[in-house]
Length: 114
Length: 111
Image (cartoon, rainbow over all chains, first blue to last red; front, side):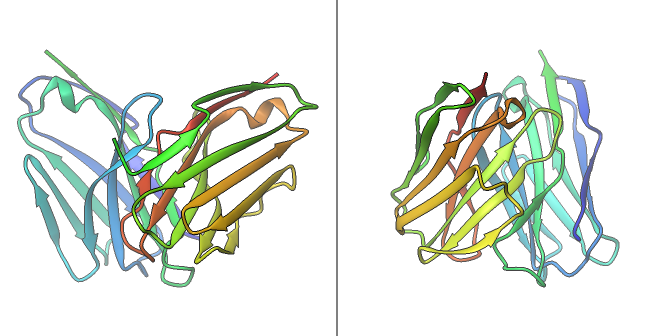
């Protein structure tokens, strides 16, 4: 059974810092990995989707990398801003299941202080 | 604002009540999902519908009953819930196995 772990569970940084969020998964038989953002009490917004054939994806100040062999992904946020404060979730489908069954990590709650 | 809407946004119900959550997607997707998000637990997949057919039931108790009358609408019928069922219920949709788009959720409190 796929398990997804995110470290750290919470992170507080001053504005302007570059930071890295970590995601690890136990079953490397995935064909993509997604990073989502969730604001308090709201739904999820997809940030980046990395296909298993890719090493990384970039969108603005966000860069996500994927290392399937080691079961890890990182989300790099450059020059953090207070508006980046949210919970960041990673999720993977498993090839052995229906491709659209996602397993989520517990999330990293990020606070960027002005 | 996403193309996935959920109603109601907030719901308080007693353990003997029957209520329904509604989800509607305007994205032309063919797959829809119900997730449960409890405090201090990872987001949990409950049900998956592909082309209106239920393809996954992730060991969900029978007091939760999904219904998908067409590819744009998804319901979650609730009856005789327990206080531990209080959570944020999120609906999502996707085109097959591509990126899932989430609604804003229904915050449910069971008294």
